[in-house]
Length: 298
Ligand code: HEM
Ligand SMILES: CC(C)=CCC/C(C)=C/CC/C(C)=C/COP(=O)(O)OP(=O)(O)O
Image 1 (cartoon, helix red, strand yellow):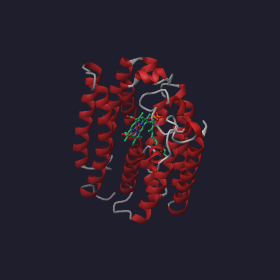
Image 2: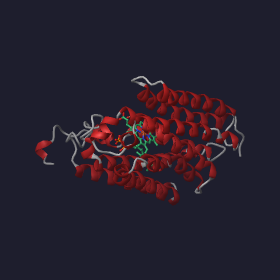
Image 3: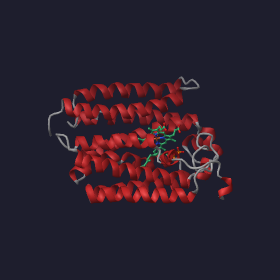
């Protein structure tokens, strides 16, 4: 693309948009909860600050690479065509430089001030999302987001290893929660936006297997999620505040999934997508509150 086609000068907000800031904020909340649950007492800002900065920068870098790789398909979908690359506000070269700089900076922060295990695992997540999911899986299989979801689910583990420098089964349990949450989160949106994905020729589940099959998968994953959300209480990681709060959230999410399958209105799919974000956020806030209020040190 030549300079002639740029519509306006780039603004710092365009760079911020490349990092998918709201997604990264929720990822960081899950990382923070991983850090806090890794220790019975407050872990201290000396670990929390560099871990959040490093994980945040590397997630933002992964998101910017996603914008770069997807710029042609983003230009074909109503939801994404106004992004900085398809709208011609930023050039691919700008985006490559930006993603490289913040990605390398994030890795350096983790390597210097946190630990190498966390730095490598975060790099693995970056590669998982930016390369494996975006470049290959997204275009190859309707299971793209299930497998790719592992990268987005990693931050609680990254937070945990930042504190302890080891991989603990409780951290894997937190990863499993986000991993199982991802299909209903995304497929609810994909049902709402199925025509967009079909137009851009992306093999998302509603495009390849139809809306009804996708709704059944959403319901099954939501049931699985409700079961997995009981595990933190069952294994003694969390207490009764978590149990009560998470059960309410699970039932609420199940009602959405049930309604989407058996009694949908025009808005059910999008409302369920919006609720999914609140559900995950509140679930992790509950883990945090419960940890400091009722759960004895393990
Ligand atoms: C492969 C995994 C995932 C896929 C395919 C996916 C897909 C999407 C898509 C397409 C949107 C855009 C909706 C829109 O523009 O209206 C979105 C929004 C969002 N996602 Fe995900 N997501 C995934 C994982 C995650 C994870 C792991 C988190 C956080 C823990 C997350 C948090 C969010 C948030 C907060 C939004 C709202 C963003 C906004 O309002 O700008 N997502 N997701
Ligand atoms: C280092 C680390 C933890 C990396 C994970 C980074 C990350 C930003 C994960 C979020 C997953 C996500 C928003 C997928 C949507 O991509 P999409 O291309 O399907 O959606 P789009 O059409 O909105 O771009």
